[in-house]
Length: 130
Length: 182
Image 1: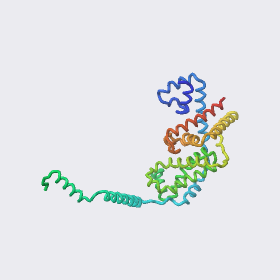
Image 2: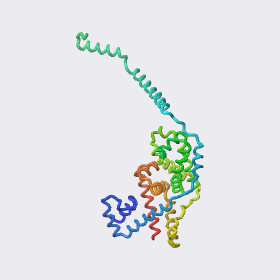
Image 3: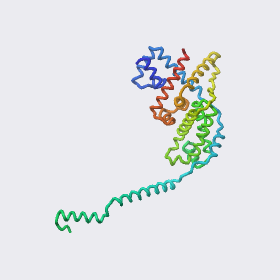
Image 4: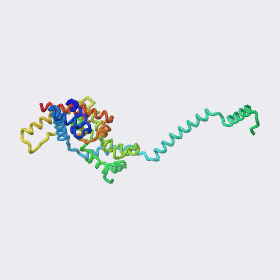
């Protein structure tokens, strides 16, 4: 591992080489032992995280006012499970009716189809099927 | 489960204002910290926190309908606040930039305090130069303690994209700290 690779991994995997994947740890230790630049990068990462922790923005917040302001708004319309099911049912019924209409339009009357099939069988076999 | 987010959200969905105030109390400060870190402006951050909780109140009755588990409430708040903050920064307007309070170590001597302030100032300057989404990735990871999966959800992006934002942000901040040493 070169020191540039170590530094790239530092940005990618974080400031604790001991927590990096096992196959990288030994190489990371070796780079750290031999490279002042790698050690400086690690120190900078530690410092960055320490300062970030120190500088978490803190601000007084008027909890009561925020809650009261928000609660002045009307809550969204509540949908009962029943009303949702009714909407689903009406929608489903509509689709089913449409599908049934198409099916009926495309299918020949069943009686005709049966009679035709019997006639074909009679013609083909020439025997009394009854 | 009486005092969990799950229970409170269910009560809020039924219009319970006290339960709502408990949720605001529980999550308000961290949302404020998140919004301030991203926008670097407290007044704007307050607006964002207010809008986030207003949406929480108005949309609470729909939570169960959408099939969203109430335990995701915290993540939902982070997602709304993060996106509101980033959206606000896209709007053209001049905002006064406010630095975070300086760390004060009562045991440190004057030179140490001066050095610490310089380093913090360097970090704040570097944070200010980050694109808003990278700053959000830093805030979600370091300030809010979210995992990459949770951070990605808050930023409404993939885990891979979130990790890339984080790598770039870390690199920029680390380099700023390294320059400080030079």
